[in-house]
Length: 285
Image (cartoon, rainbow, N blue to C red):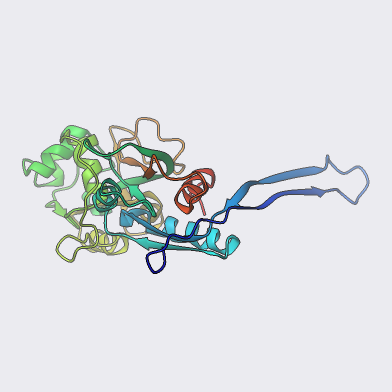
């Protein structure tokens, strides 16, 4: 909307690309040829400006998706606001139509009818310093640690080292831990991921803190935890965090990311177009 006037979105077909690559051996008696086919889904561009509001957890995915979309659809502009899941859903409830909300938790009750699509999965690991001497914790043991009933790694089969939590505070991982492992009631995504009072330490900061403390204990995204040489990712009830978000099994520290627009968003709107783009393009960018 510019100067109080809403510009009708100009909807146009961008392209449908099919790439076919054949690699044929050029030597006699070579094995079978290799055939690779990649289909890029049809994309309909919508013009205008869209604000995407949601959890900071998905900010890298959203920014990359916005860059990809606007590179293909040059008359569109997409702004990413990591004000929190609750903030985005609240603004949708207040009637914002040129807005897409992203949630790292349930949308809760009392909201208007929304159109939602799954677009990402996040997987986290509990990590310890190797000096702790543990490789697996049960849900009960994790609960006892968080409640202060267990204060030494020796009490859960490890070395006689005091447990030293690193990076506690509000975060998606902590909410998932509370609900899926500690049994706390499930709550909507936090609205304060970027507020100065409750910004959790970044994964790198948490991992460095755990690596520097013999009793260090924290959580981080699976990929970052697996790549850090100074920490040990833990199993939870025998389950190690999967490398692929599509192979979650019974592993509890995981969260689906959903994108929402109002149910009455026009089919040709930028909100609807970008919602479909997120859902149809996996988050492994």
